Image 1 (cartoon, helix red, strand yellow):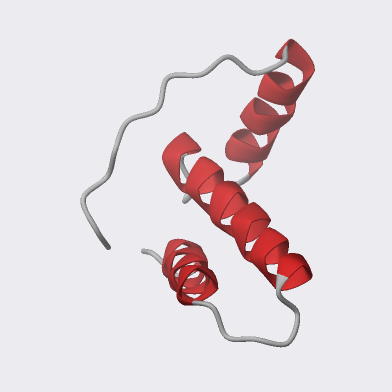
Image 2 (image 1 turned 30 degrees about the vertical axis):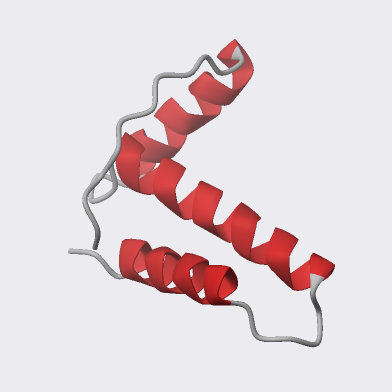
Length: 73
C-alpha cells in the first residue's frame, strides 16, 4: 500500500458508537482499516456510477486499496 496520510475529522456520535461496536466484535480490525475500506468502497461505487461503461484508473486504484484493506493481516 502507498504511504498513509492522516485525516482528522469529526463524525456523528451515533456513527462513532457503531464503529466502536464493530471494532469490539472484530478485534482483527482497527479504526484505520475500517475508514480506509469505507472510503475506498464509497469512491469505487461513485466512479462506477459516474462512468459505468469505461475503465477508470481511479476506480482501479480504489478497488485495489479496498481489496488490500479487506485482506490485510
